[in-house]
Length: 186
Image (tube, rainbow, N blue to C red):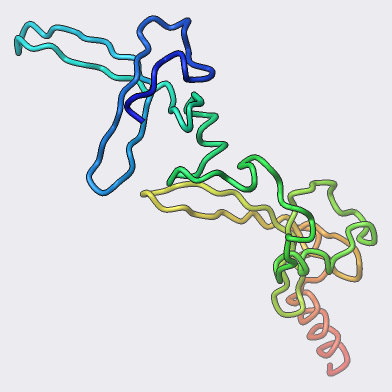
């Protein structure tokens, strides 16, 4: 690998006069041939020259690859990728999960007065079906979730929380029963 000349390398960046070859040898690993660009700056305080190295790419089998091209074409260990990194998986690979099937239980078209927000989510607690939105935020380095309950669905109809409390308030039913019973007793 060290006997490779610049003329033998395909796609070498000849337009960059600072570019040079750098052979990285590590114990127990194979040699890696990098194309680097180095800047040397003199530091008057320490009276030393500091080197700033920028890695432009790698040379594999006599072909120069930029860092981005190398990451797309090869894995971390240097083997050729069988599937390109930006390729999407076929639809058959997406497995249905419980979370996805629960969302599909509610037919949005059959619910009357439902807001046309695609980010609405549904949760069932007992016999109540709540409609809410989620917001995520970070607090003290931890990911937190804030749920904003918008309303409920009853008998295929959407009610806001205020509408639901007015129409289906349990305390009003109890009060009306007590007043009716008192009226009949006296």
